[in-house]
Each structure stands twice: as C-alpha cells, then as structure tokens.
Amino acid sequence: MTSVPVNSVQRLKVALGLALGLVIGALCRLLAIPSPAPTMFAGALLVVAMTLGYIAADRWLARRHALHEPFCGDPDDRIKSATRTERPIEKRGEGG
Image 1 (cartoon, rainbow, N blue to C red):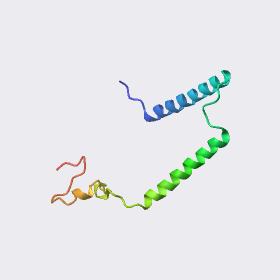
Image 2: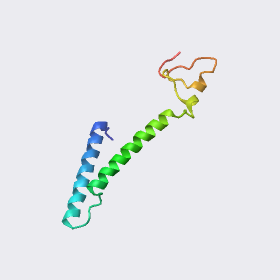
Image 3: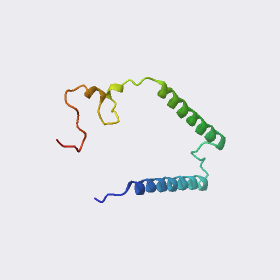
Image 4: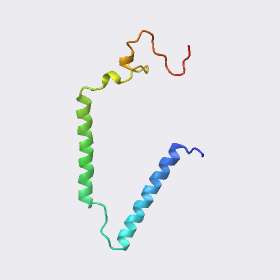
C-alpha cells in the first residue's frame, strides 16, 4: 500500500465534498425537489449561532479548573503524577 501525503488526502476530501454538494444541488434543481439546505437567512443565523456558541464554550472552558491536571504532561514530556519517582523519567529516544 502506498502512502499518500496528508495534504493530498485533505484536498481530495474537499474536492469530493464540493463535487457532491454541486451534484446534489443540481439534482434538486432539475427534479424540482426542495433543497436540503436552509434558506439564506436561516443558514446565516445558524452560522452566527454556532460561532457564538463556540466562542462562549471556549471562554467558559478556559476559566474552569482542569479536573485532570495531574495527568497532563509538562513541557519536558513528564506527567506530573509520575515526577514523584526516585529516578528521572527519560525522554523517548534517549538511551542510558
């Protein structure tokens, strides 16, 4: 199996998503089926509501105390609860 660069995979997904959206939109128009998308005003309100919800949740979560802070790693890749051992924890790739 050949490895594909991540950029190529992401570009392919975006291109397929756009193509699928255009095909569905064209079929809905040709067959006189109501579009599965919200109206322009409702769609705009949906985008604004999602953006405001994301910003509010981000600010609220940033103020909360981290419940699992002892399990978070330090900048030197050590887990705070593991730093209480007698010998220092070696970083990956460093041999003794």
